[in-house]
Image 1 (cartoon, rainbow, N blue to C red):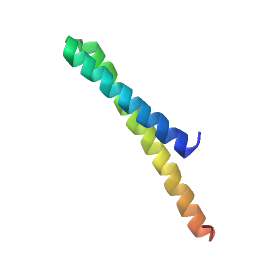
Image 2: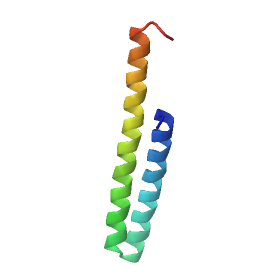
Image 3: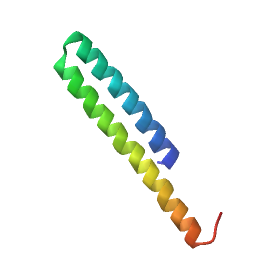
Image 4: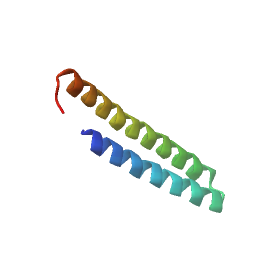
Length: 67
């Protein structure tokens, strides 16, 4: 998966997770709150993977003299 794809999927999972948490809080559904938090954390991890991929690519490009 490309870094951009990882970052976009991560942002989407974070957003959906936040929505689930909000709905869970309004409805008093602790299970939905927990599910939303788990999805938000998954999204944060995906976004971080994408950012790391970008960093590795940029470092490799610098070492190889690419722009």
